[in-house]
Image (cartoon, rainbow, N blue to C red; front, top):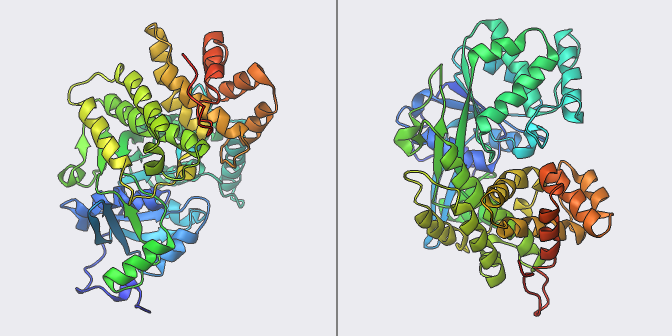
Amino acid sequence: MNAAPLALNRSLKPLPKPPVRIVHLGLGAFHRSHQAWYTQHAPDAAEWGIAAFTGRRPDAAAALSRQDCLYTLVERSAGGDSFEVIGSIVEAVDGANTARLCELVAAKETAVVTLTITEAAYGLAADGTFDAGTPGAADDLRALSAAASGEAGVPGTPLGRLVLALARRRDSGSGPIAVVSCDNLSANGEVARRAVLGLASGWGSGLAGWIEANVSFVSTSVDRITPRTTEADIAEVEEQCGYSDNSPVVAEPFRNWVLSGDFPAGRPRWEEAGAVVVGDIEPYENRKLWLLNGSHSILAYAGQLRGHATVADALADPLCRKAVEDFWDEAAHHLQGEGLDIPTYRRALLERFGNERIAHRLAQIAADATTKLRMRAVPVMAAERADGRSGAGSALMLAAWIDYVTAGNDFQDPLAAEIQAAVALDGTNRVQGLLRLVSAALAEDPGVVALVSRLLGSFATTPAATPAST
């Protein structure tokens, strides 16, 4: 078609861009389908522009900047696609540009910093504590010290860069600000607080005290399935919309955002776009982390072991479907709260997962297992065993992961070297070594080790293979 770029094809005269009042770290597809969508649909959107910074690479910022930060959101349902141009991101920046990050966070007009940096990026130990000796933290602390001395120092992690920017806000006297984690972590606001304060305390200069007094850490539960964009998606937007968009985002129609915490400098009226503001977020977090994310982990490992590539394909496999339902039954024992409506939520998940037009790749979900399993399998198993039950559904998730990494599959994980070392062990030692990377308590429980060991091979592709008896 050779259509002109999106920025040149707006049917109406562009409105003035809203001022930057939100800084986002982790520019990617999920942020653009979720927080940016809610911000655009808030009734006061004209007052709240987003400056979004990339994580590891500048590519997404460069691509968006070429089309004036506009992009198309494709909502893909079983009945067809709809298209909407999103314009709430007004600036897209390379994450390594800490000068611009510091300038924006230090500005008095900036009220909110949101984060989608992945679970592994928070860098806390398995017990939830901050460890200044980890490579990422140690490198950041050296860079922060260099920056404080006027030398060239650029923190390598998003949280290190955020700490540097918060120091500039303190020095500018711009007042309080909210930091909002939108990653799939239980009590993610508290996790962000511990990680930021850990880095700030290690750096010194009194910054930790200022953060304690002036930075609110907001917890959220976020939910919208957003697979990676494909070349076919780009071609479809050009064909259906009549313009060329190098950065469209595809997402399911469903969306959910629950927030809990203070916004001392204000925020958009997200609740009028459908977000939910609550006092106690934990029940909502656990419902999403265990039922949606937990089943995603089961499908990611079991499904690939069975030869499947997408969530919809894996869910259609009776063996994988049963594993999901069994885990949900366990998790439901510990999801008690007014308004959670677990049966309805489960039915909705089955419908969402079964949407074959959303090609959510299992390989994408499988990344960073050691971080994810701590929040998805471990709490449910611990609660089940405390109540006198085996926790076999949770154990099957862990067994599927062990089989997956043992089979020689490529994987991304912050503890990749440790996983490889444990895989090289034999028998029970291998199971125990891998479990230890997820939970030291589970690894030291002989009953858990024996249970997980019995479940190994449950997703073998031979017709005679069936889950081991529990």
